[in-house]
Amino acid sequence: MTPARLILASASPRRRDLLLQLGLDHEVDAASVDEGVVGAETPAEHVERLARRKARAVASRRSKGLVLGGDTIVLCDGEILGKPDSPGEAVDMLMRLAGRSHEVVSGLALVDAGAAGRPCWSRVDRTRVEMRPFDRVTAEQYVATREPLDKAGAYGIQGQGGALVTAVEGDYTTVVGLSLSGLVRLLDEAGWSYAFGSRLARARPSEGRS
Image 1 (cartoon, rainbow, N blue to C red):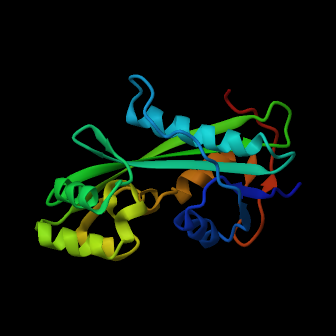
Image 2: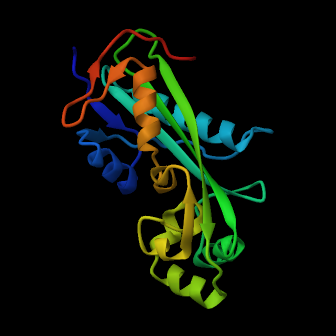
């Protein structure tokens, strides 16, 4: 089996940490794409499209390697909550989430940069998160830590923001930003094998979706 070099099309330290949890050595080559919603696409379509765009953008400047793209949003009352533009907006987002549940929707995409046509595989994972009731002062104190300012929905479940969460229904790592179980399933779909403590290797030929 031929080993693969994994390339993460994201500068997110959280996604890097999750890959390291699986023992996957990788390099970072962050993609820069417009993350605006296109037309009437659903939240699932939105994150899957962006994950694919990021992976393809990096793969286009590579001659080999398996490129991983990802995108994660928080969905509340049918509205996408992205990264806050300011501390005030972060507080407002948190107050919308306080005392209720919301959904985290995350897209993953893999592109084989060394294969003919650069085939792409993608998937979407969903997890429901419930937050405890809290007041605006609590939200302001959390935002003052600056932890939530670069995170969708204005909180980081893996950090101090975990103190606001009472329940998670689904894959916890989806909320962090990269579903590990989803990644393993996507690798299998793409024809790559993941074994504990070893590198990725080609298991069988496979064709991605355009």
